[in-house]
Length: 67
Image 1 (cartoon, rainbow, N blue to C red):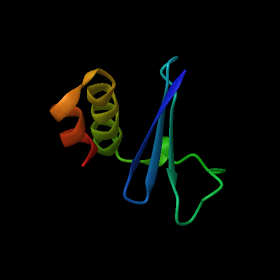
Image 2: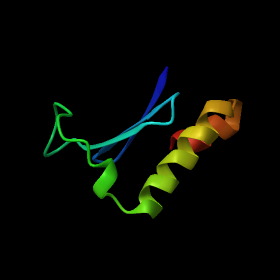
Image 3: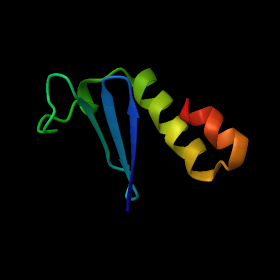
Image 4: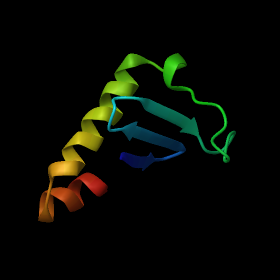
């Protein structure tokens, strides 16, 4: 299982086993170069928190998170 979050030019994938992938879609649209290890930890934390929140949110809260 995995979850995908697209935020601006970024595609972030969080796998059920804890692995994470981060791609910059403008320069790597085929998702060949995972930038997770080179990204700022604050960015990874933000994206991880957002994916986790969206997984469990419903209704208005889910729509708010999707904006």
